Amino acid sequence: MSFGDPNNPYGQPQGQPQQPGYGYPQGQPQQQPGYGYPAAPPAPAYGGGYPGGPVEMPGGVKAARVMMWVIAGLQLVGIVLLFLAVVAVNKLKEDPELSTSTDFNQFADFGTGVLYALIALAVAYLVASVMLAIQCAKGGNGARIGIIVYAAVGLVLSLYPFFPLSLVHLVLLILVIVFVAKNDGAAWFKRPRH
Image (cartoon, rainbow, N blue to C red; front, side, top):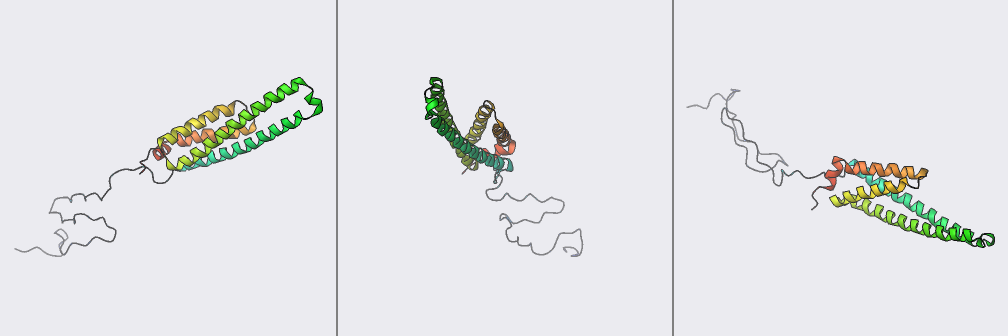
């Protein structure tokens, strides 16, 4: 019995099976399929088959992180301005003409207390902004929820004492919520962290 013509294009290929190239996944060597039978799919590679989360931070999450750093910078500017307001009120308290007015003294005492409360609130918000921007890189669904709550509270706080700078703050916070709540952002924060 003969093996047929070696030049026949419809016959079985002749010769030795080729060695896999460099970087080719190891596994069972591929057998020559029988005539009329399709080849079996190759065995999965070691550790493969598990769909992990995105490896690189998505662009929207990167943008949200940068926006939180910008918000932290705006908070720092606001804290400096509030301290300057406290200094100005204390300077006005020393004015001999105004110090005799009981109305001014009551207003100055009340105003100074409000300014200190606003400074404390701004410092807390600054710390939250920095901590959540750092947590953005680590991921975790708790960080995502924290960022959304942080931005929602910031939206409410930037609506009440409305002035032109709060419009920038408002837009940044809306964008932070949108970028973190998108599907790729959710996948980033819910990825397995080993």
